[in-house]
Image (cartoon, rainbow, N blue to C red; front, top):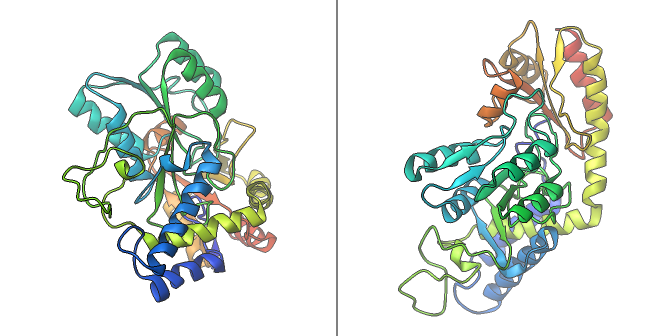
Length: 372
């Protein structure tokens, strides 16, 4: 199978990641801080390596890295912690449903005001538009994606976070599409991401990385494996945002993934992924009746979407699947973005390459599309 859906989850995973997960199932079987002995210590040390690895990426202290089931849970927890009754929050039209749906639910529950600058612009809001909106009317929180999961366009997060800090707005950055590809230390107060995309870790694990001075109270409650019999959930990080049995097999796999990333270099992996994407984009531009949805930015992730005048995206996805090519067709959990791009009726065909996507894969995809 030719796999072109790395924006959803990277596949295949590195052998070392699979082996690390298997090691937990075969030789460990327990979680950190749930007992004592050599297996518990190995679990604890592995979890700490993951905290330290993510902290090195985000610029926050390791004890301010909390793990959760994924970016969706992390974003929900953070937004509930930061947004009180009648808060003003700013965001963009390119947010994932984990932001859009969380904000709309909180708007109903807490009477939020939601600002979406430059909604309706051709490629979505520019960095300039977001910064201008912050200066005009600062929000309590700005939550925004580092990169669109439909067009691959990347926001200038560092500049946006600098502007937000100057006007007293807290920033929450969703790095699900960029973690493993781009630098994440951009000055955001909170960085939330998933480990199963460009980080090449297993699914079922995400992280919340918070600035040392940012206060966020627990939003879920339960066991933490503490050696102290506490009646109430701890407010100290990272346990403040962690409750219940952790996904330790995924943590072992993510530890291996971080080592793998360090060996290869995120910039190298991004460049390798863009080589095949650029070939696909060049080929698509030669096809009649195909419209590529431009990211509108110079920096991008290896993601592109297109539509065809004569075929529904789902039809194209089915045709590709019949030829052994897995791409993503339809909607991509980003409802406002489809409205912005004029693709609300049927969505798009999304191509998301990875570091192992070959020239042969790109050629095979284009050959099928040329026959439409």
